[in-house]
Length: 240
Image (cartoon, rainbow, N blue to C red):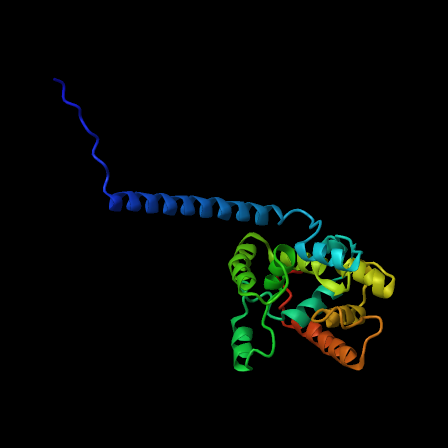
């Protein structure tokens, strides 16, 4: 009589351990693939014009139109670059994506003022969505150093002035200059650049062509700041 061999069953604890290992391995591989994909996209966007962004797309659906024209930084008045940096991130050339002194100052003020750098705003405007949710802030914190690593400061600023919202449905300095002043981005003067930069914190509530007293005063302050960053060479990272 032949004896039948019975297969021994694996203990349930061993099966659970094997399953967990497979899940962890799968999660690791998935994370690596996702990370590589993100790096690839960010690297490619270092060289290519931005056709649209998630926020542009949502705004176009909301208002029914979109004014936008990608313009190389060489065709943008330097006055715009000086004014935007002075208004939004005077230490743009000195940090690696996060302005720690500005963050400490914002915390000391109880969070009543923002501390986002131009680099952070580029990540938000070009890759993510608007809003104060923690998931968005977490993604912004992860992507900002990646953009700083793969892009030059000049490229970061080029993308910023092209995708920033200057009025409802109006994105980028070329469309803004045409909409507000009837000129191209290359012809913007220092006072016009200051007015454009003055509307950036609240583009839906402020106008560069019909500025309020507070917007005019902010523009004056921005012109002073623009002159200062040129004098102390805080514009060296984005000017040839």
